[in-house]
Length: 147
Image (tube, rainbow, N blue to C red; front, side, top):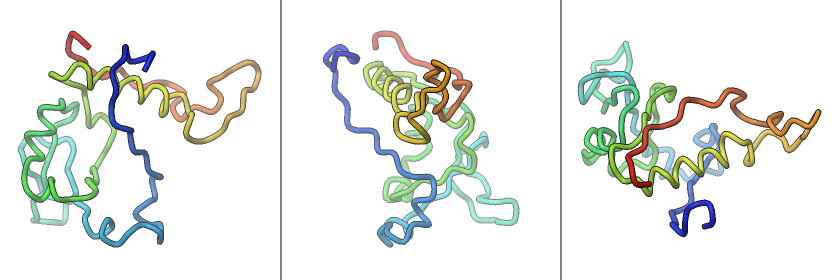
């Protein structure tokens, strides 16, 4: 709470990148996957180059408002897993909800960019960055004023 100015947020669930292939994952989860195409301008796009089936689509650097608008259909609301065609640059930040953006950015910095959840706890040559997931941190997400 001291990092968040007394604000609280729900925990950020982080799963292993191969959890869908893990036999311990509940079948209800593995059967409830919705593909989302990243990088498309339209609200839907072909799910793959060899498919005529349409999937929900997001533009690159989508804001929180765009994500909610594009994924408001029943299929997206009911899916247990959203599988992005490409995660690089998929989310660009917030247009509103400054408190949520502050908490999310702080949790991303602490848990993902600093490597506190994976890789290693090694501290070699007085360098705390040895175990990080990203040696070069991605660009900061956009945030509204007030958070």
